[in-house]
Length: 400
Image 1 (spheres, helix red, strand yellow):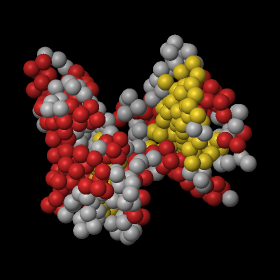
Image 2 (image 1 turned 30 degrees about the horizontal axis):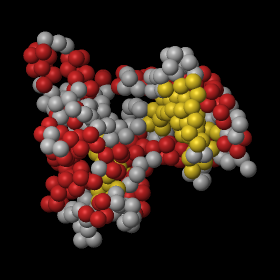
Image 3 (image 1 turned 45 degrees about the vertical axis):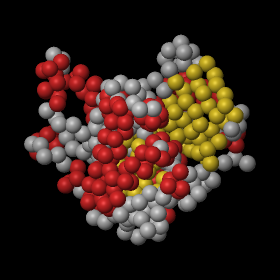
Image 4 (image 1 turned 120 degrees about the vertical axis):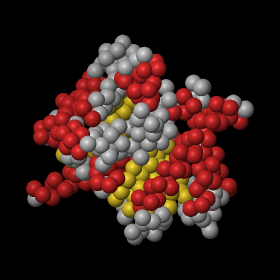
């Protein structure tokens, strides 16, 4: 029997991550990536019904990679997509929800490209390729920034000249919105519903945290760009803005080079003296006595705890904390150290629950007497598929 499936696409400049989600069942029979596109080494790797496969597609561009994917799917008539959901990094202020992609929406996405020059053009390239490969299917854009558009002005405005905001869009936008929405909704259900204040921490190579009140974002750590906020794998997070001019003068280079260093050579990588940006490597090195690795971990945990405490203020009440992302879901020691910093807010780790990453305690990793902290695995592909179907169903209802 044919299932209603949504093809989820996340397009980069030289890659397409994809997954097929069965609507209703919310299972994922297919996931994979087409990588190194437009090079002789281009290839597609995927897992279908638990079986890993790969195919060389030398020289393939985005459109040709999707045609290769379509060829794979043709052998499985029960898994034909009925819609395509696209991750789009930046929707500016215009998009507060996911949207059916038409010419006017695509024009708005393109108009936001100056706010995400490395991402939106690649997202548009993927959308155009998908429209060519699947011309009969509805296509929906799901924006990283949309979830954060409920922030009040006191949270998203910078204290800079008003003309910077009015004429150039200088404000805080926030990112990782699909992940924060997904785990925030699950935490809301787990903690009993109602008007709750929940802080969600998405921790991976990129890191951000969000304050969610009654399922709406009221503040977040990332800003105009993903460079603001927490310490990340290679991104610095918050620094004194004068570092740009100070280090440009000291290094005899331009601001663009300082921006590159703060994005690519800072964060955990920079603090550890260039040892690693991967938290797993740093934890192993710290256990072996590497001082730089320990410093990177200590700064990461301290800065994260400080931002979580600030976001509790934004919530107006603090009913729970969620860890998610690769670090958040798997780094027991990092979670314990962060919770130790937050003991003044009533958080106390349960060592046994934390050791199992909350799997044996319905996600809970704190003691029964503590304010709850949960480990909830994120699933951005599933969230994109859900929002895709929601948009399609709403569009069908409006035309009925």
